[in-house]
Length: 257
Image 1 (tube, helix red, strand yellow):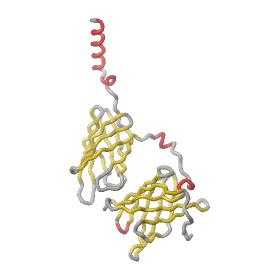
Image 2: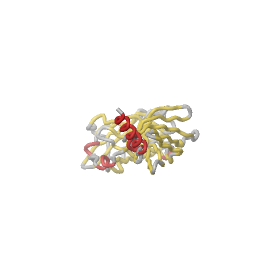
Image 3: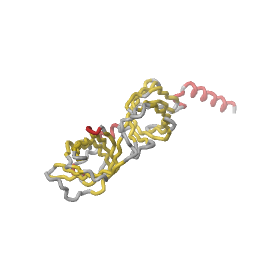
Image 4: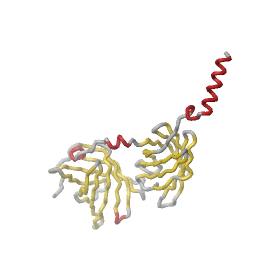
């Protein structure tokens, strides 16, 4: 019995002197991605958190595709597997701070955010660079079809509009038409570029006898999901559009080209 107690005592001393053997070695360096649902937004906010850890000291940058967050994080503290930090939100009303508390487990972190009395949960996954490099590039025939989903303006995120984009391949080129719930008079879509699952569109429409241009930059996630950012320069409006493919082949489009 004495030998057993003596052996256990030695093991305890060894583990105490070597904390890396008794605790999980946490490293948060990398690019973390996820989504947050915020009050007043009908479409989730996609977050990118880039972190660098050096001997326990953490620095980082946080951004979102809505344009509310785009700054270096402040007051970062990594203790055991808990990461806390703050970030400044820029909005048309007033700038304010968000506080984050995350629990890190391997390539995933989950936790809570809090700002101006509002709070919620969110999760992030560390981006696998090798997986991104091996991602299959989509072809024109993969994305032709009818896509539809909600769009919301950053200035008024609670007001959404269902947009429909019909893409058709003709002789190796993409053509398209656009429509929405408001019966807006859209002109034929100009496909400016399509490469590496990124689709850039120029969409003109007529409102109150004046022509406006909406530029849209779309990330095609897979054969059935896309998400894009848009800007209407003359109106000073920006927003997010998320869409799913509703049918693989559009009906004959009135392209007129």
